[in-house]
Image (cartoon, rainbow, N blue to C red; front, side, top):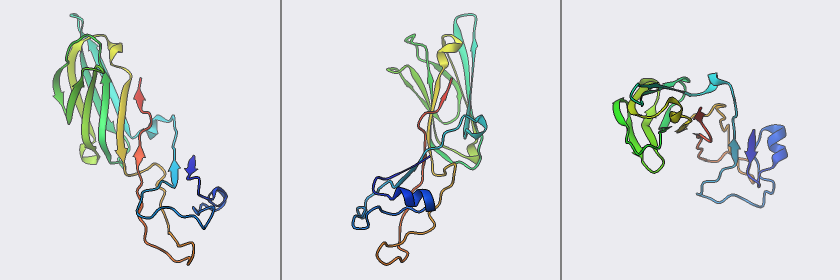
Length: 187
């Protein structure tokens, strides 16, 4: 589903896949970023998830949990940046004891969340593990929230050309495309 800027001719976009102004007398500001098309991709197909998260809490007889969290890059075409895997923890006032981990982590005491951070997840860094121990039950570690940015989108939309409204000649332009997580949870 695509949303265009209010100044864009929606019929032109719908019928011809072209982005043009509704009113040629109005223009966008020069040297300012303006989003003219936003695209939202919604799917419930687990095969399309770029990053798989597995969480294996193992309750111990003393009331604790040994927790193993893993990530795996499922779609190798993506380069994920600023990855955050946020694991909720029991509100026990305890700090988790961290074992093996890839990347980095921080404990947010206010939100009782363990935040596992990875600057980049790509083909060379396609899987990793975070292990920790804390008092709690298996259900305490869900839902896990995931956040990241990617410069590749699912639909790989490309701009073929940008032309001046007045002269119809090609002009220099810049383009930025990002995949941004809206809601990504493992329950």
